[in-house]
Image (tube, rainbow, N blue to C red; front, side):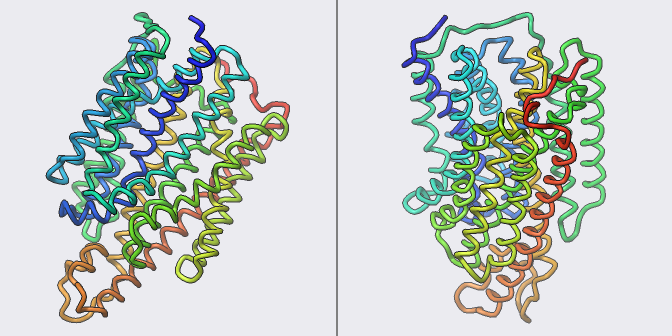
Length: 499
């Protein structure tokens, strides 16, 4: 069924709004975290789980949800995902404890994982003209960046007037509008019952990811529990190996590991993961530092980290437009190298010059925008057509995995360095070591020496974490550069990996 031009672009608006909600919910809590932790009385570990439950579950389910969408039809899958997302948003908004909020965030991820592959599939089905489709996919991809930029700003705006639950409640009217619009605009549901979907594979992927995150978080604690680490590493390893073995035995695997033999495909996957690691890591730790140390409001902290996305938007559009002329190598490896330069500026100036800090954030964003804009082309253009659904799932998993590892690793490292370096004034309870939030709550207004000690420790933690982010981007530039070194402009989309 060919849709009219107006209906096609209206449908693009609806599915892009769905994607915007998904990416918003990844970053909306970065600026809200200090408020939320205080109001719910959450520990620093629970605070990280409130953020991480979403990408952990989403990354685990995304591999299979593209295939499930083929089986039940992408229109139906998008509608189901929207309904689950709306219900989970309500549950999250009124969560009375950290545990219920973590569960609601996991439930939100189920809705997001159902919607996300369907947003891209519906664009593919609706836009039959290739040039039109490329424009539609570029708009779709740019909105993912806009979502991650708007998250901290919207939560900052809402927290000025409302309680923290409003950051979830805002999803509900958008979900209702998108449900109605999809029913009116989307093409008929096109199910393919011959497609096989394997639930055990998805569950094994979730087990492997949860094990990995618990192992990272526990290792970073001041008094880690060896048994918990051992059990988490065992779960991650067993889940990962069982997943890999199961894929080899399935006639329709969720993931065919042979596609990673294509160097350009692998470079695209790594570029997506490295870029999201940097964006999520910088947003998470910078919004916290400027609220807790400098006394910024959540809105002001959100506007500050939006500089990353602001820098990324022009290069994201330019990268896709110039890919056929310059090829993947300069845009992917060059973009990651440029972001490394920006990160060095942030490291050197975060506590001295606001102007140079913002310049660093803009340059970092410009580099990451370029790399991310063509990562999709590298991934989608280097697999056979029959593997397109699997490739788009792998792409979405690499983005989620990047932000998941950033929050788990960098959030835990931030707390660990803070705890290890704080020099407590005499007579201060040891609980001030737990986090900067705890120290500020204990200090009140009458213990300036504790506030100074805690702020200095947090700044040394911020410095350490930013060094790690800078190093990871430098490694990303080198690795993708090596993988793409034989990939000239003429081979922007090289021969697909043969099986």
